[in-house]
Image 1: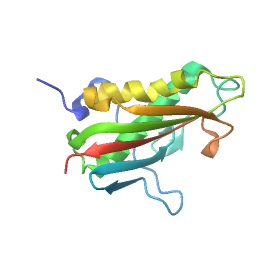
Image 2 (image 1 turned 30 degrees about the horizontal axis):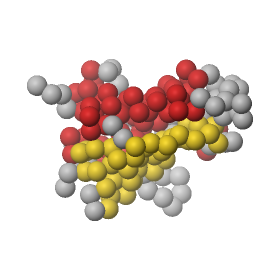
Image 3 (image 1 turned 90 degrees about the vertical axis):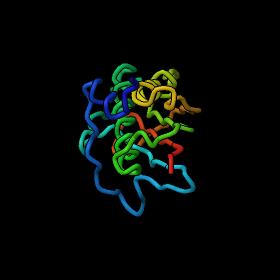
Image 4 (image 1 turned 60 degrees about the vertical axis):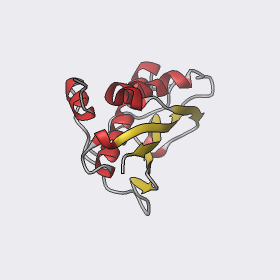
Length: 156
């Protein structure tokens, strides 16, 4: 029998982080015509920044990969709220956008964002496969190394 996304999260020994307060006049997600637009999520653990610094400087590629996984877990928390706690309503992840704060010399940006992509496929199976971009930037909010945003198609 296929596992639900919630069962997969549990089998990975993960728990969905608590959603932190909004940082201004924006929403954590917006649902429009069956698509959930998840705002950029940071590597927060129950609202507290877990990773800081730039990749290629204070942050290793391996640590940044873990930060991307945590940011993705926050995306899944937002999706859980958007689906009223029924992650099985996520039909597919359409697009993932990954931003990596890094030094100009660090160019293995896609390998960092793979942390998010890998977790999405582990949790959602084939529904987690997605189109994606991964870009390097000079800085991200709260000095985090990774930010991830998602567009997902939901069952109505």
